[in-house]
Length: 350
Image (cartoon, rainbow, N blue to C red; front, top):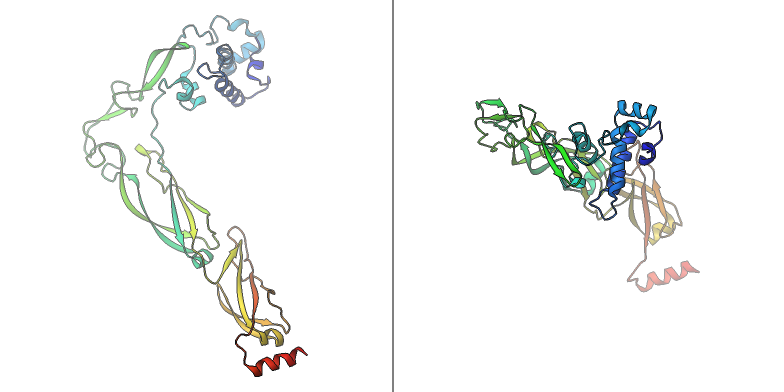
């Protein structure tokens, strides 16, 4: 039996490559799936029990699979000894293996990381362009300030769990569709903590966390655009029993502006001039995001002409410099002309 061929790896494959190959085969051939194949699943496990162990792999490379028959590789599946399947290893491969094996229980329970939070922050057009500091109100899970996240009432007696002797896990044998397996599960007395205390914290009921309303200050960088997200590491909900906090994701919503439109880092606006200004030329005041500036209108300017004000746009968020400000000229056609004005325009036309 060629274990390398069973896992579709070459003889020089690393342990990480072998583990990934086994994970793929186990998901593909697990007997509980409609597409499963119990025989191939057993073969894949047998191959991994050998190739996933450096000592057994060296022996296999020298002597072949003959020395690993009759269940010695941990792949016999008729009833595993304590030297059979390493459940901690399978837990690492399958992320707890509940999705593959129906949930046998794992090793000691690790304190769970805090949950990520996402919220929408509405800012004005000008705030997005120039940047701003905002105060964001949140209701989130935070570390209990009475027990400092430990879960024990201050002054309570803390002892090593006598059931698991501080490991947070207990070992037993469980019958499965694959035979008897030695499994580890969370200690039922200390819930995986490895310690017990005489009294739980009266404020958080022993969880180490609690919910409260809080406010944090956030700096919004100049140039941020509508729909972009800011990640604030560790500003999400607190993790349990010393586990790291989650992250806070702020999705930016920018209000519209009646004067300006934004396209990337460029600003677009319109300027209205009279028929006379268009024909003879003029200098006009144009509003920009940084205040008014003078714009020269050459004689004979047509309606719809665009003028570019270089560097008068939005600060580039991930780079240097600014975009441009594009001014579109709109020539206003005279209305409600009197008789004399109409005659003058006719003479001008001639």
